Image (cartoon, rainbow, N blue to C red; front, side, top):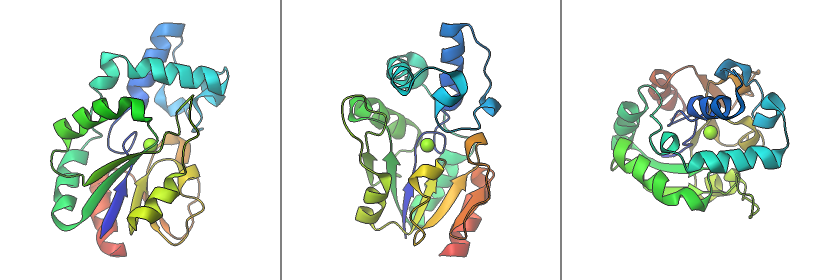
Length: 191
Ligand SMILES: [Mg+2]
């Protein structure tokens, strides 16, 4: 099967270092559990433009370069790659292509067929919908944390990686994975 896997907050833990970065700069004390909305600005205030600027500033830090994989993700992705074709589909912009490549090579070596950047966090370009890429790949399964990217594709099996911003009742084609350890079982079930 073909499986499209998101990077941030699915394969790599970005929200925690990003919130720490925000707290350090603004003297705030947000915690990850406070982000019950996907858009950062709805929680920490300011405009979308401010949030994008901050994300792009964060992209330049060692904390971003050295983000850690989500618990158990590398081991389970390695196992899935033995049986399935895996693709990374990320909202990140092309501008962080090289760092993304470094992170994937370091933590998921040889597991990912191809990396797609949809530029949804771009300030200069209009991003393309992730679903366009899912259909282009012919993905049988998508592993995502952001409901906005997958709500309108009822014909693809979706695994939602549980995060504070996606805790709503899910439609029939979606399966919630509390942790990566739940994912192989869900993949087998929908295969
Ligand atoms: Mg994500």
